[in-house]
Length: 374
Figure 1 (tube, one colour):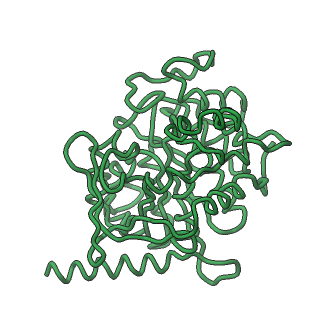
Figure 2: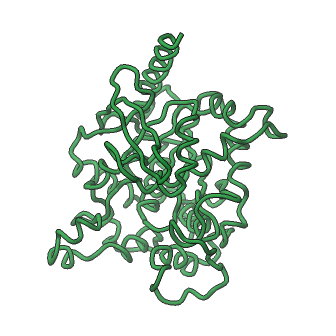
Figure 3: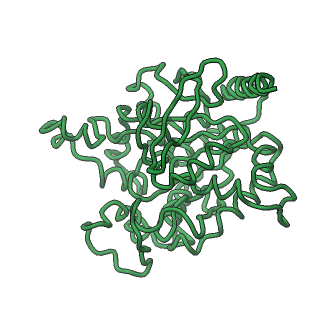
């Protein structure tokens, strides 16, 4: 029985992988329907990933169903909405977790960011989240939820969006903490759907693309900071999971192109220009900046690579390895165990050079919105 189950699981994974080489223009296959889940808390490759997703949607390569924060008590949802507004999709459903998960201005913080507090200067422990509070200050009227805690419950958003979609049609792309996936799996039948969370996911979701995993073992940021949710979500998720791991994105540098753009008001440009070190700084001490995950091309493109996989599939940019990803211990450690025949998970590996992949990302981030709002 175990052998039969393993064969069925591998067959499902293979079919999902093949179906995942996404459509070219005029293809009869439907475009991916994406739920984008981001922490939007400290780093800023999240902004690049959301920009890439909107650019791909503008080109007709995907449909964005919802953009959801995996953090609370901060400006994450408002920052998401500023980017959505810039690309002409201000009414996309949003949400944030309630009652658990990462709260405040950074992973490990314990206090909520007060939405009514003056912006002040970039200093102290809010240095990481400052960029998102600044977006709200610089783009008033471009968002609905200054405080993520005022946004709808992510569970409700997920359930409403999933219930309305055709079976096996949704790709969830998460580039942050796994809180929402754990909470979704634990939801009960309700007025939205008679299915519990796990059954709803099994029915509606084609694949989960997760920016997670420290290959071959270690502590990866997204999986670590709500590691109990990671343990539950990755062990119980009922569809294939594709991992864009930390090792892949670490030396794939993108974003300087958008940072150095000229022209119109652009919140994506603002974030990258305000946080990427100058070319001169990197030339002075490239080893230091490399340790901090910066290169001449910009910032490590962890999250953007996950979006490429979610929309365009594993081909044409990546190879892959099959195996098992799992959380181990109780401190946020993870391990990847290769298993070419029976592994239930996929991890992307290098095929096209990372320099070329980064240029694809840059091209997407620098595209002008097709239906941008002013």
